[in-house]
Amino acid sequence: METVTRAEALRARIAAWRRAGARIGFVPTMGNLHAGHYSLIAIARARAERVVASVFVNPTQFGPREDFASYPRTLAEDQAGLAASGCDLLFAPEVEEMYPFGTSGGVRVEVPGLGDVLDGAARPGHFAGVATVVTKLLNLVQPELAVFGQKDYQQLLVIRRLVADLRLPVEIVGAPTVREANGLAMSSRNQYLSAEERERAGVIHRTLRAMREAVLAGRTVDTVEQEAMRALAAAGLVPDYAVVRRAADLTAPDPGVRTGLIALIAARLGRARLIDNLLIDDADQ
Image (cartoon, rainbow, N blue to C red):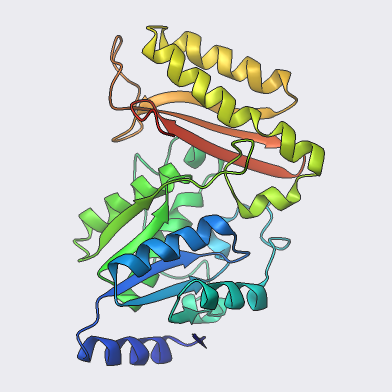
């Protein structure tokens, strides 16, 4: 596997593959990779002749009091893991390469509505940063497909919306969430947790499953959400939200609707802010 840091080198490598008729799969990441990330590489590998990954800790999606400075940067380990997982090319740019006019003076991409609720409300400006950097990366790589994890469900919807609205010729593939033994969704931020906190964080997945069962049993959404917030707080977490929404657009469901829904949670535990979700209709999650 080769690593490049400049857009010109990235495009040159990909152009050679295209001349050979290769289909390109892309997996963008912020690094500090784990089994969840490598599962995305495997999906891309199965659907494309060449796989490109990126490692870039994007400053514009972090708020002023968030963990941009302390976010774990483990490039050497990431390179080894990507090579072992079948990645062909890693793009690992500096901030100046991605934002040649600066992080505050460049073009911004926003997705109104989807980008303003839930995590968008809890982290103002977050999804504008995500949408901007993903648009830049998709423009640089120009893949046939790009793979994103379903754990970041709102992000997945935002990216699908921007691709559809900007008419970008790329298929966005949603990948199943990879979980630890206690159900905790794998995340780079899990390493902020102590061993005791990591075990306790399994309450998030248990609460999501309880929310699904309650909705399917006919409980009102308001009741389901209130009980979920209490369960998280009782376990020592500080929830930002525990909600049931329409899976298609994250709007509130109509009364009595039991299909096409998703339960979503964001909660803080120690230094970590954890997010997860569960499709109401999918009993295999």
